[in-house]
Amino acid sequence: MRAPAEPPETPRTASGRPAPLEIEVAPMRRRHVRAVLAIEQRVYPRPWSSALFMSEISQRRTRIYLVAQAERQVVGYGGMSVQADEGHITTLAVVPEHQHRGIGARILYELAAAAGARGTRSLTLEVRVANWPAQRLYAWFGFRPVGIRRNYYAETGEDALIMWVDDLQGEEAAARLSRIHRSVELRGRRG
Image (cartoon, rainbow, N blue to C red):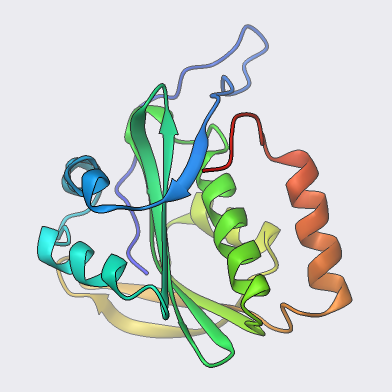
Protein backbone atom coordinates (compact mmCIF):
# COMPACT_ATOMS: atom_id res chain seq x y z
CA MET A 1 0.00 0.00 0.00
CA ARG A 2 1.16 3.51 -0.71
CA ALA A 3 1.75 5.89 2.19
CA PRO A 4 0.93 9.61 2.20
CA ALA A 5 3.39 12.41 2.79
CA GLU A 6 3.43 14.25 6.13
CA PRO A 7 0.23 16.28 6.72
CA PRO A 8 -0.06 19.89 7.88
CA GLU A 9 -1.47 20.75 11.33
CA THR A 10 -4.90 19.24 12.12
CA PRO A 11 -7.74 21.40 13.54
CA ARG A 12 -8.05 20.77 17.31
CA THR A 13 -10.59 21.31 20.05
CA ALA A 14 -9.89 23.44 23.16
CA SER A 15 -8.69 20.26 24.92
CA GLY A 16 -6.04 19.72 22.22
CA ARG A 17 -7.71 16.65 20.72
CA PRO A 18 -8.37 16.53 16.95
CA ALA A 19 -11.74 18.08 16.21
CA PRO A 20 -14.35 15.48 15.25
CA LEU A 21 -15.76 15.58 11.75
CA GLU A 22 -19.11 14.13 10.79
CA ILE A 23 -18.61 11.92 7.77
CA GLU A 24 -20.54 9.60 5.51
CA VAL A 25 -18.83 6.54 4.02
CA ALA A 26 -20.13 5.29 0.68
CA PRO A 27 -18.96 3.15 -2.24
CA MET A 28 -16.65 5.03 -4.61
CA ARG A 29 -18.37 5.86 -7.88
CA ARG A 30 -17.22 7.47 -11.12
CA ARG A 31 -18.50 10.85 -9.88
CA HIS A 32 -16.04 10.70 -6.96
CA VAL A 33 -12.91 10.04 -9.01
CA ARG A 34 -12.11 13.70 -9.74
CA ALA A 35 -12.12 14.55 -6.00
CA VAL A 36 -10.15 11.38 -5.21
CA LEU A 37 -7.51 12.38 -7.79
CA ALA A 38 -7.20 15.82 -6.18
CA ILE A 39 -6.39 14.14 -2.84
CA GLU A 40 -4.08 11.65 -4.59
CA GLN A 41 -2.02 14.46 -6.07
CA ARG A 42 -1.68 16.14 -2.68
CA VAL A 43 -0.61 13.13 -0.63
CA TYR A 44 1.32 10.78 -2.92
CA PRO A 45 4.56 11.43 -4.81
CA ARG A 46 3.33 9.15 -7.61
CA PRO A 47 -0.47 9.50 -7.81
CA TRP A 48 -2.69 6.91 -9.43
CA SER A 49 -4.40 7.87 -12.69
CA SER A 50 -8.08 8.32 -13.37
CA ALA A 51 -7.96 5.24 -15.61
CA LEU A 52 -6.53 3.13 -12.78
CA PHE A 53 -9.26 4.20 -10.35
CA MET A 54 -11.94 3.61 -12.98
CA SER A 55 -10.55 0.14 -13.61
CA GLU A 56 -10.47 -0.66 -9.89
CA ILE A 57 -14.01 0.50 -9.12
CA SER A 58 -15.41 -1.37 -12.14
CA GLN A 59 -14.22 -4.71 -10.69
CA ARG A 60 -16.93 -4.95 -8.05
CA ARG A 61 -16.60 -8.70 -7.52
CA THR A 62 -12.96 -8.44 -6.41
CA ARG A 63 -12.58 -4.81 -5.30
CA ILE A 64 -14.04 -2.65 -2.55
CA TYR A 65 -13.44 1.11 -2.84
CA LEU A 66 -14.99 3.64 -0.47
CA VAL A 67 -15.07 7.41 -0.06
CA ALA A 68 -15.56 9.43 3.10
CA GLN A 69 -17.50 12.66 2.64
CA ALA A 70 -17.97 15.62 4.96
CA GLU A 71 -20.48 18.25 3.92
CA ARG A 72 -20.71 16.55 0.50
CA GLN A 73 -16.96 16.89 -0.10
CA VAL A 74 -14.72 13.83 -0.47
CA VAL A 75 -12.21 14.00 2.40
CA GLY A 76 -10.77 10.50 2.18
CA TYR A 77 -10.90 7.17 0.40
CA GLY A 78 -9.65 3.64 0.62
CA GLY A 79 -9.67 0.48 -1.37
CA MET A 80 -8.87 -3.18 -1.30
CA SER A 81 -8.75 -6.19 -3.56
CA VAL A 82 -10.24 -9.50 -2.46
CA GLN A 83 -9.04 -12.79 -3.92
CA ALA A 84 -10.47 -16.03 -2.53
CA ASP A 85 -10.26 -15.56 1.25
CA GLU A 86 -7.51 -12.91 1.31
CA GLY A 87 -7.88 -9.13 1.18
CA HIS A 88 -5.18 -6.62 0.31
CA ILE A 89 -5.56 -2.95 1.26
CA THR A 90 -4.34 -1.12 -1.85
CA THR A 91 -4.79 2.49 -0.82
CA LEU A 92 -5.96 4.65 2.06
CA ALA A 93 -5.71 8.44 2.09
CA VAL A 94 -7.25 11.44 3.82
CA VAL A 95 -7.01 15.04 2.69
CA PRO A 96 -4.13 16.58 4.71
CA GLU A 97 -6.17 19.16 6.63
CA HIS A 98 -8.48 16.44 7.95
CA GLN A 99 -5.90 13.80 8.89
CA HIS A 100 -5.80 12.52 12.50
CA ARG A 101 -9.55 13.05 12.92
CA GLY A 102 -10.68 9.42 12.70
CA ILE A 103 -11.48 9.43 8.98
CA GLY A 104 -8.80 6.90 8.03
CA ALA A 105 -9.88 4.66 10.92
CA ARG A 106 -13.51 4.86 9.79
CA ILE A 107 -12.60 3.95 6.21
CA LEU A 108 -10.37 1.09 7.37
CA TYR A 109 -13.14 -0.15 9.68
CA GLU A 110 -15.64 -0.18 6.80
CA LEU A 111 -13.15 -2.01 4.54
CA ALA A 112 -12.42 -4.62 7.21
CA ALA A 113 -16.13 -5.11 7.93
CA ALA A 114 -16.90 -5.49 4.21
CA ALA A 115 -14.03 -7.97 3.83
CA GLY A 116 -15.31 -9.96 6.79
CA ALA A 117 -18.82 -10.00 5.33
CA ARG A 118 -17.37 -11.51 2.14
CA GLY A 119 -15.75 -14.32 4.11
CA THR A 120 -12.23 -12.93 3.90
CA ARG A 121 -9.95 -14.63 6.44
CA SER A 122 -6.88 -12.38 6.27
CA LEU A 123 -5.91 -8.83 5.33
CA THR A 124 -2.54 -7.53 4.27
CA LEU A 125 -1.01 -4.18 3.31
CA GLU A 126 2.28 -2.36 2.84
CA VAL A 127 3.21 0.85 4.64
CA ARG A 128 6.35 3.00 4.58
CA VAL A 129 8.71 1.90 7.37
CA ALA A 130 8.94 5.53 8.55
CA ASN A 131 5.16 6.10 8.66
CA TRP A 132 4.61 5.48 12.38
CA PRO A 133 1.14 7.09 12.60
CA ALA A 134 -0.19 4.73 9.92
CA GLN A 135 1.52 1.74 11.55
CA ARG A 136 -0.13 2.59 14.90
CA LEU A 137 -3.53 2.75 13.17
CA TYR A 138 -2.97 -0.61 11.50
CA ALA A 139 -1.76 -2.20 14.76
CA TRP A 140 -4.99 -1.03 16.43
CA PHE A 141 -6.83 -3.05 13.78
CA GLY A 142 -4.68 -6.11 14.56
CA PHE A 143 -2.20 -5.83 11.70
CA ARG A 144 1.22 -7.15 12.70
CA PRO A 145 4.54 -6.71 10.89
CA VAL A 146 5.64 -9.81 8.98
CA GLY A 147 8.39 -8.58 6.67
CA ILE A 148 10.05 -5.84 4.66
CA ARG A 149 9.89 -5.13 0.92
CA ARG A 150 13.17 -3.40 0.10
CA ASN A 151 12.96 -0.27 -2.11
CA TYR A 152 9.22 -0.87 -2.53
CA TYR A 153 8.47 2.81 -3.10
CA ALA A 154 10.35 3.41 -6.34
CA GLU A 155 9.86 7.20 -6.29
CA THR A 156 11.78 7.54 -3.00
CA GLY A 157 13.61 4.22 -2.63
CA GLU A 158 11.92 3.66 0.75
CA ASP A 159 11.25 0.22 2.17
CA ALA A 160 7.76 -1.04 2.92
CA LEU A 161 6.73 -2.84 6.06
CA ILE A 162 4.39 -5.74 5.23
CA MET A 163 1.60 -6.02 7.79
CA TRP A 164 -0.96 -8.79 8.15
CA VAL A 165 -4.14 -9.65 10.04
CA ASP A 166 -4.83 -13.37 10.38
CA ASP A 167 -8.19 -14.99 11.05
CA LEU A 168 -10.47 -12.06 10.32
CA GLN A 169 -13.36 -14.50 10.87
CA GLY A 170 -12.20 -15.44 14.39
CA GLU A 171 -13.60 -14.34 17.74
CA GLU A 172 -10.61 -12.14 18.59
CA ALA A 173 -10.89 -10.19 15.34
CA ALA A 174 -14.66 -9.84 15.77
CA ALA A 175 -14.18 -8.49 19.30
CA ARG A 176 -11.50 -6.06 18.07
CA LEU A 177 -13.72 -4.74 15.28
CA SER A 178 -16.59 -4.37 17.73
CA ARG A 179 -14.37 -2.25 20.05
CA ILE A 180 -13.17 -0.19 17.09
CA HIS A 181 -16.75 0.29 15.92
CA ARG A 182 -17.67 1.73 19.32
CA SER A 183 -14.62 4.01 19.58
CA VAL A 184 -14.39 5.41 16.04
CA GLU A 185 -16.63 8.37 15.33
CA LEU A 186 -19.48 6.68 13.47
CA ARG A 187 -21.75 9.68 13.27
CA GLY A 188 -23.48 10.38 10.01
CA ARG A 189 -25.10 8.05 7.52
CA ARG A 190 -23.68 4.90 6.01
CA GLY A 191 -23.95 5.30 2.23
